Length: 101
Image (cartoon, rainbow, N blue to C red; front, side, top):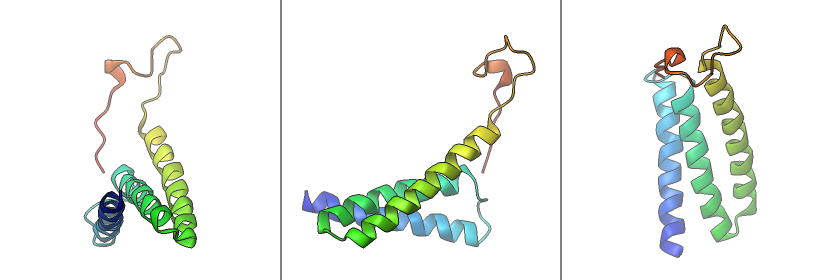
């Protein structure tokens, strides 16, 4: 378990930093990819902090992950195509779009 917690902590930190660097350098936009990096990294860092009993670190990453999850849900909803007819399903292949970050 110790190795998994340590590996998760390092990978989580790497994912959060990579997302932040990519956004700051203009390689990606503030969208699904960036928020996904933040959410994934914060969950991994929560596990690491929990394992080590670092409760302020856990609390920080719970807040970080919650903010990222809300932003990710909003980004996903914003990219969802809207149906012009009530009988047309949202998941219809006719309505699918390719969205890039």
